Image 1 (cartoon, rainbow, N blue to C red):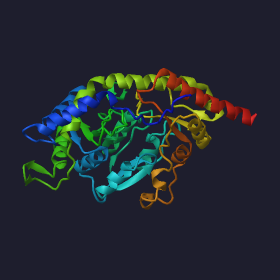
Image 2 (image 1 turned 90 degrees about the vertical axis):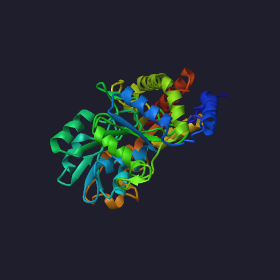
Image 3 (image 1 turned 30 degrees about the vertical axis):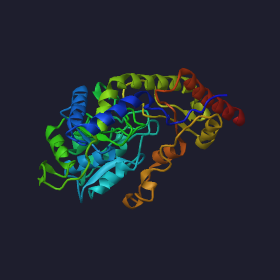
Image 4 (image 1 turned 45 degrees about the horizontal axis):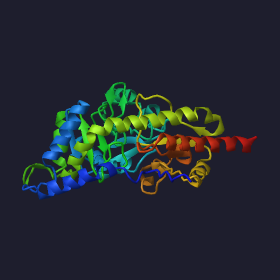
Length: 378
């Protein structure tokens, strides 16, 4: 009897349980009683800064907060527009709304399902303050093109790299293509931790300084406020835990890449049977999740579930079709590629705790489903 293969593993931090408990005890008993923005957070920020080659890394409460902090640091506000993908997670739009600006939804590339530069450029106008491409699923956005667009039109480039830590495109790490990028450390991300957390990464030292100010109530010093900020501070226990886990990050990424390559190779011949894999290769690839497109997405999901294999839908509706964001969507606009992606996308397990046998089992199940589709059509 095969064991179940959950989409999100239940034992992500099992090997580090003792380390986490020891850190909890050590920091909890330390005389300084410093639980936020202490020496561990500073060391974590410096580790990421050096490993990325950034000018600054500012740890904050979560990836969503990171987006809002950058937008505020860029002085994006009422009367401004920010072009965002029509297909993605709520923070792409909600972070823009939260600073009083207007999200403008651009369609995505039909194969990669990330923002399409050709769909973004026509939406840039005199009100556009920034463009915000997002890396999602298995592929980074076309950042060279977006950098060109930002330079051509004189707008800010905010890279939503929340799911892409460790990804590299043309030698440039995710997060460093634009004015700033963001990471999320929620547990299932590529560098996840047992809790919430995020970071802003930037080559712009002044932008980093402003974000650092805003994340802690706008304080330059204790109880002295330079401007109105917010509370988005990083936890010391989590920072210490991430410092410990960083040494194994490259190996975990490598394992995710191996799994993705096995899937893509096994699925290469399935496109004419209604199952389309992401483009092959490692350049500009993210391994947070691995997403197929399937003509009968729900049928494939049920097929996998019947065999004890978990899967996940990212996302069931494009953002402008969501009730919360419909008021910000232009009535005359359409997003056919985002609509199609929403109906066809299915994510497979790709976490590094999968064995080779597990990976083969997932691939076999997908191929079995595709073979049945072919038989049914013949």
